[in-house]
Length: 629
Image 1 (cartoon, rainbow, N blue to C red):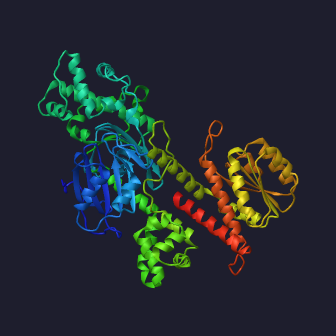
Image 2 (cartoon, one colour):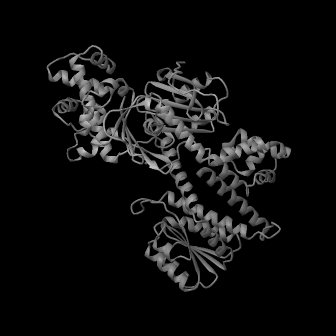
Image 3 (cartoon, rainbow, N blue to C red):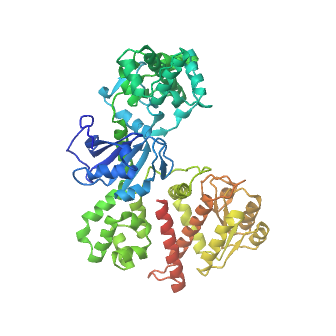
């Protein structure tokens, strides 16, 4: 295991209470590892050759098997790859893996995966004066956007945007923008590249492989046939041996990099400065200051005055990927501290629990994700206790019940950087389709949970619990939720009907009266027939609960609006995620109505039938919430 103890700050004081954290920076050829034992303090660094291992799990396991001390429970890895959902297919290695599967296989509580340039960007504000070098421009604006660009195996681009006391990262694939020559020499290189590719992106030329191609193009232009296959050889000849052609290639690369950096500065209004990093750039640190880099950066026509004020810095540290991954992990764990604190409370309070509750606590500490996903019956079976014991355990921690406990627990056990929408693409394999569709739905459910108006939910439940009659209106895709609601509310002995034909909806609405409730379900909230039915119900004295788009015409008319702010094209495509959200809201309302109909002694009015329905609804609701979190 190759170690480099000099380049990382080491410390053994003020360590993390939960133990060390694993950070990794995995590139095309080398996987760098270290343990962060305290903020900014790293121990046991190691560099492992990727070629010796079959995948990410194998190389991580190899590092973990060689460390001293306790195994880390939280980890973050920076990858030279776009991160789009749970499935990662590395572009520069034949590795594909699931973030969640690797987390589980390594026994981690948390595993984050971020793009390496996003991680590098997160490290920039903490660079010391010895870890960066100014090569032009004036003072950076403290509150300005910071840009990052770096040429290595490819061309990476990222940015930091001020966000209160923290920085928000901007992930991009800016290196794939089309290359545009700024002078005759660069045009010669571009024409040479066109012989191989019809489209030449910036990273084809502004990169380590691009350096070889640049020298090849310049040699061909001079009628030479000498070939060099290694960028390291071009660097050696140009920097150490004074080879004129290699030095021209290096200067051409620096000029291209300067132009690309200026484009990033203008695009982002990066008054906080432009940082230039990567191993290739560090190798050129002494050369780049005398090269055409800064001249090309300032050669911006009418915007020369603007970019000339923006400082450019060379990043001299080779540990920004690890430091940035640690920063991402630190922010994540701080944002989700409730979960960690909850587990610590359980550990600290074991002695105060009954023997049966202690078995539940042990199960939670050993298998938190299992508890997160299992219904109460399975949790009880695995802990060898009764279901009421599981509920008592949750309430002993100040929770209202199992659902409340799971929400607190789930907040810090996320497997990756918070899930965002991932575009399904033609050619995606089945495993990736599963990951993207589930992640998109989970993301939407979590967003809805966080944005729902609790007071509106309470008012809607009050109206339904006291309703003389409930009618549910839905057309097309929304009819599924309407029919589901009819089956649920009818079992509570409340007269309930679902109408999925717009003409019948209007006629039925005119027959309603005070005490009746309409639940109108519409993705867009703008269908004329649904609006007419809602107006007719209101005119008849009934209340209208709308499950619909935020700010829509239906939401504005309704007595109570439960707004679903999920944009989804519906004109030419079947709505998918919004249908799930509508069904989930029906479940929330049904559980709420069931809880309202509990007597003061805790017995249900409808006794056995309603008890069975409530248990079924609670189990489904808990499963959906667990999956969303």
